[in-house]
Image (tube, rainbow, N blue to C red; front, side, top):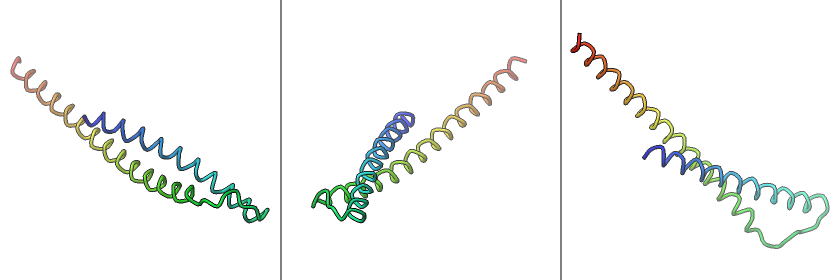
Length: 95
């Protein structure tokens, strides 16, 4: 289950990062044309708001991805330790 959540958040965070970079590039081009050439590409500023929203989503999703990754590693180590302990007990019983 943790592996599924980890993969889901990893894919969502990567997708939102790509969307953020796309809107960031578009915002940079818009500001460059506005400052240097004094030309407005559009009167709609929704791409700036969308870029900020994707930045927030990216930060939240990367944080959750790291958290699920750490939790998954803890469970794997606990499972390994339990397996090792039970195999040592079984080996001592046989001897």
